[in-house]
Structure formats: C-alpha cells, structure tokens
Length: 127
Image 1 (cartoon, one colour):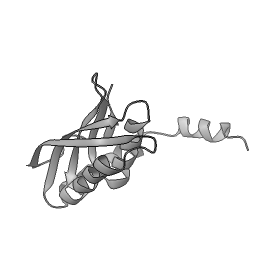
Image 2 (cartoon, helix red, strand yellow):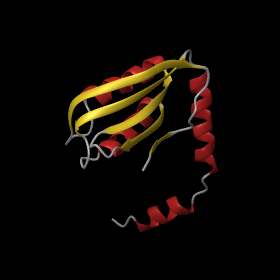
Image 3 (tube, one colour):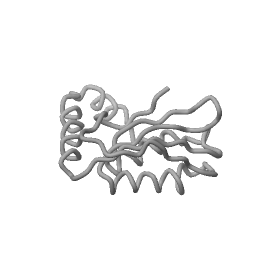
Image 4 (cartoon, one colour):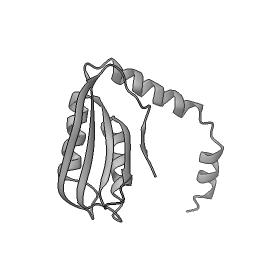
C-alpha cells in the first residue's frame, strides 16, 4: 500500500478548518464551567522516551490546552489549562501514566488557579 498520495493530499489540504476547529475547542472549553490552570514538572526517566509527544497526544485527547518541554536538569515541565475535570485527568496522567518507556518518580504541581479564559488555543511541544 502506497501512502504517498495520502501524504500529498494531507500537505495540499487547506489549514483553515483546523484553525477554526482549534478556536471552536477553546470557545467550547471557555463555556464549560470554571477553567483551571496548573504548572507541572515531571521527575524520573522522562527524557529520551517520547514523553513530550505522548503528553501532547494525551492532552489533545482529553481536551486541554497548554505546553510541554524538556528542561536542562532532565525533567519535563509545562502548563495545562481547561475545565477543572479535564485538568484533573491530565494531572493524573502526568503523575501515573506517561509514555510507555517512561518512569515517573514524582510530579510536582504548582500555581494552580482558576482563570477567566484560556491563554492557549492548543497544546504544543516547546523547545
């Protein structure tokens, strides 16, 4: 099976619907009750094990926004925003699950607060 035609179609597809979808997600979340924001840092074997990629994927599945990045001290840090129940689901994933090859020793959460609107339109990996 050749995937080249599919890849070419994906590249040629207009991007506007995705931007509208992201805005729609942010708008839907902003009306879904109280919004929460929390910073996190994950300790353990979390670099070199696709942790950021899996975090981005899980955040998008759950329906939260924010970011994730590696630190120079071997941890992964970031911020999650969204409805309280979805933020709590992401906090649980960051504490207990992670990527398949990761080992989470502990996760620190800080600056947890209620926010009036989302500061991000999606979830991204930062470098």
